[in-house]
Length: 314
Ligand code: CP
Image (cartoon, rainbow, N blue to C red; front, top):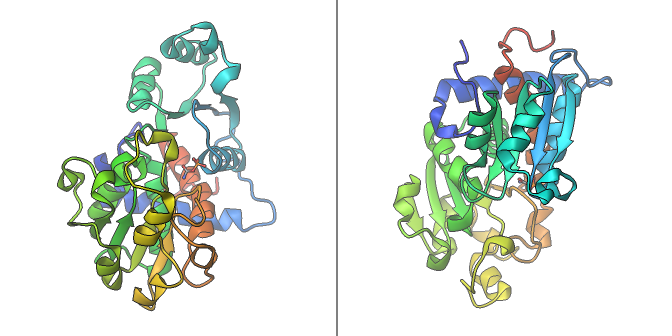
């Protein structure tokens, strides 16, 4: 299958076949990552800029590892050490970087839409590594990879996404991605953390009762309470939030025997998940998600720079 995309900015522009292709290529890169020498010359000679203007642990480190394992040259750029603090605009910064004849830009920014602007200004392939409350497409891919790896298929699964729905870029990509792949999606959270019209997110069901939703879910996807994006006080206390929406040892009794737990990280232990559920060996897939981040980011870099499903090891 020919890959027709120049960018990875909006997962809803991808078809089920294209997402499946990316997940299949990620699976091929899993084999590379399980060798003693975890490096292939596939993207030797390409230069990728990682422009992170907002903090990140998982996304930034896994992109960098993915690039190194594909033999790319990388430039890590962003934050307070750049000339943007002297007043240089983002777009002038992008044009400056493009003068180095780079090949692809990975962008994280606290403002929604910045990756689109970078794509327009650079004319280069761009991967959105999380923009404001908007999208986080590679997070959705690693979540799909993790769920497919566990269940064998995503089609027909019941997935509940719990928590801060209104501020979540993870939701912005994960809900459309799950729908494209045939899952049934329920969003669960306090009304004060829902967008004004939650149905517009594309979920099949909306509820404020985790206890009612839990018995029907195959995947319980807990979102982080994003303290940095909350204005005012949308719930009385983190303790009360945990009582109503936290996944706890007590609530596990309501879960299906085979149901799994996902979380994009970083975790607020004791808020979204208690220690027992966060570290639950059978249910928690949190570290599998982190590992999948390297695999799907290798797949995204590889396909956007022109690779086909036949040349993974080349
Ligand atoms: N899930 C995620 O995006 O984590 P980081 O903010 O650590 O990259």
